[in-house]
Amino acid sequence: MKKTIRKTVSAFGQDALGHFDATALAEQLQTGNTTSTALVQAALNRLMKVERDISATVCLQADKALEKAEALDRAGQFSGFAGLPAFLKDNIDLNGHPTRHGSLATTAERKTVNGAVAQQLENMGLVLLGKSKLPEFGFTATTEYSKGEPARNPWNTGFTTGGSSGGSAALVAAGVVPIAHANDGGGSIRIPAACCGLVGLKPSRGRGAPNEMAKNLPINIVSDGVVCRSVRDAAGFMALVDQHHPSKTLKPVGHIKGPAHQRLKIGYFVKKIDGQFSDPECVKAVELAAQLCSELGHEVEQIEIPLSAQFADDFLLYWGMLAAATHRLGPWVMGRGFDRDALEPLTYGLSGHFTRNIWKFPFALRRLKGFAQEYDNAFNSVDVLLSPTLGQPPQPLGYLGLDLPFEIARERLMNFASYTAAQNVAGAPAITLPMHHTRQNIPVGVHFAGAMGTEAMLLALAYEIEQAQPFRMMFGDTSDEAIQTPARKAS
Image (cartoon, rainbow, N blue to C red; front, top):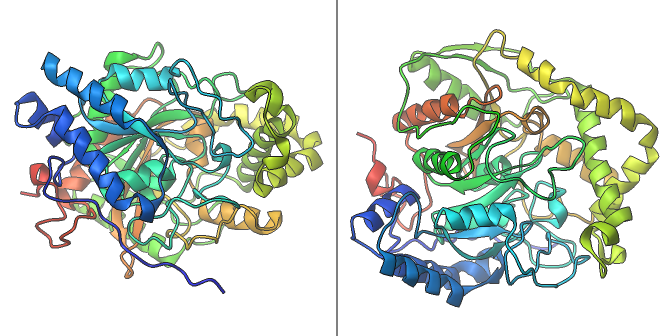
């Protein structure tokens, strides 16, 4: 049996990036205490230090990033997160680079324009250093491959980063960059954030620039956002989204800068959709979060999970439809040169699941299209749903391997990624917070979900929780003083 690699990897140090979050670095830029060039160069140096261990990137554009940073420094007018180094997930087009979607089946043809999401990030002034890894087409909750090096969790490199935004999460957790692009079609912001001990907010459907691959789906389940290390970074990013791409249908989030006075009704649950309890560490994390929320004055009660086993079956069939479309229509969707024979075994398995059950799909699709109302009904008696982010803590690499027999892969995936898909189908927001660690120091996320358009409420609650229980980050020094960014120590 192959020995599991167990190594903690941190790029944090006494350079321009320091231990600061994105907000603190932006403040330093705006007050002239650092430069974008210094931050970008520090990020590139940090990447060289840890990339061999975490294997989180697919391509770099170091020279282009430094040129942009130098141009921003010459202009000298910084606002928002302009000037900060970041990465783009490799399922969005970036001018000058291929978009491989984590798949050997795609072509290496370089794109000549940015996708809408990449352009939005560049318009915000973020300096994109390159692209981060994802599993094939984001079809699973780990950033692994049957052929190729997986992205590795900086907390323990023998464990999964989660998926599908696992490369971005590894880069932020390890300290290479303070913030990175991620997107979420079934939990793919929240799952890797939970695995890597980060804050991950999935925005409501309709926030931000459209995702070209998802906007024409029967149900658009994809939202784009970021993974980051503080609540204020998530809030700052949402304020920039409002500024650069305001929603036509949703009230602006605004720039949430702290807790709210409003006390909330919070319903929590710890059983999975199949009625079984989550792993004891995940249960413990939620129970501790529920206790903390109660101590903060919120009304907290335990409830039954507001989802049925039918929802899980329907979502898996929808997921299978996406895989079948990729498998069968890849050359038409992805362009000539798409190689079906190079797809991952899991993609074939999901496609086969759809094909065997295709007669059920019209009924499943109808139920999923009506799910938004069912989801809204869950908020008739509560303001927030509290649950584990995952059914288990991060698992060793290989547990969710893409070359497992499909029935084993299916069972493990549904047990692991048990809680996050509902918000994708309903279009609603949710946030994971790094509120717990196992005895082995592996992060465990706690999940807070709201009704459509309630990002402001979730961010205000997250601020309050962060202030009451500052999150543990992975710095070189793991003392209580060092695990908080200097700009946001608990008072």
